[in-house]
Length: 500
Image 1: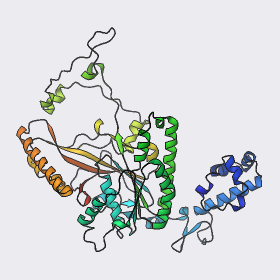
Image 2: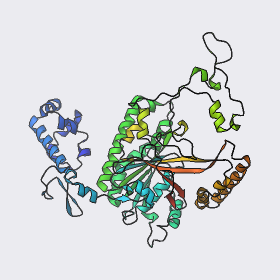
Image 3: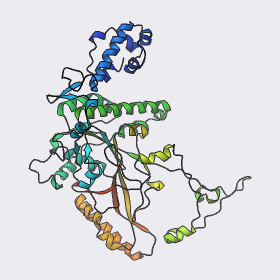
Image 4: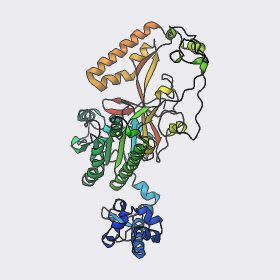
């Protein structure tokens, strides 16, 4: 039984030492013992039937005890269904009522009321929460804020240290120090959070990551009892392992199946550690571009995809494009009237991944805003890494969406007084001031073209936080954009009046 001590670490094997070698030799697992007949197992492993039944009974009794099914509500601490936490008897998980679970609910604040409200109070303990988004969306900024807020007393934190596991870069201590100096809730505290209470581990490759997570991490959690475990990021080593092999055996179906099994075991490990130590596990995840299917009519084939000019029997040439070379100088209304109508892209079936991934990836179902292109367009679609297998291992997915805000040329006054320009100055010091000056200068040049021009000029970046799925809070409504936030010198904060 290769998984007995993994499922029941405290199981006493002294009375069954003569059975375990034969069971391991014939690859009989705990699931086999609980689901198959004892006579079939005894015949397969060549063991006495009575001894096998005795072992099955002992395993079943201990499993029921851990779930709180081994005794009545008045059980004592000597029974297997009762655990001792802080000197008090605590019933198994299935013996707890809804009131017991609600009293144990604890969260870690993002230090912003709007973001906390969208998350149902903050990041809860005992679950795996994923924060995903493209580079520059604000993932690391939000994680650094959580590392500090978890050290605060309730209701913002749990007054416990934190643990940061990095797979790409070291802990940005300079940025953490800046947060402590400038955040309005952290700066005036007489005893603010300390960088010395942030434990760090580094996993440069996948092999060291597996070793640290399976062996060093449980010891660190038991010794220091951190309130928050951050892994930044969960997909970096998996993606590096896939891209570094030439040729690519990692894309073989057998290798992909093995990676899926590894992800399932990783999710099981992190969930068990989160429940056992009552800590919040927050992982950052990367995203990749997602390309929607395109259907082209033969009469509207783009010029760069047209057939060569030499006559070939049986082939038909595509007609030249009716648009002139200076198409970008036309107003948007003229472009819409002159462009040919392309063949509509067929909608995927409701049972396909292309249709269903909009409900769990965080991209593909948002509505456009007044100053931002359609976020559901093909060039803005993203997909979190590690696929559907990893999505089934996490309890909550938070998508940070970063989009370029656009403004028609000529609205220079709006650009010059936009809050994002002010935030740019306060975020990066002298470099931010210089960048803000460039924005104002570009806004002044934009006014020379006149508002009648149909050209668009980028103003700044806008960011939204979307709760894609979570069992404790309602997700973003269909077509909604989430809560708009911004990154500033003091961390992250919600933007009031956004079109979320």
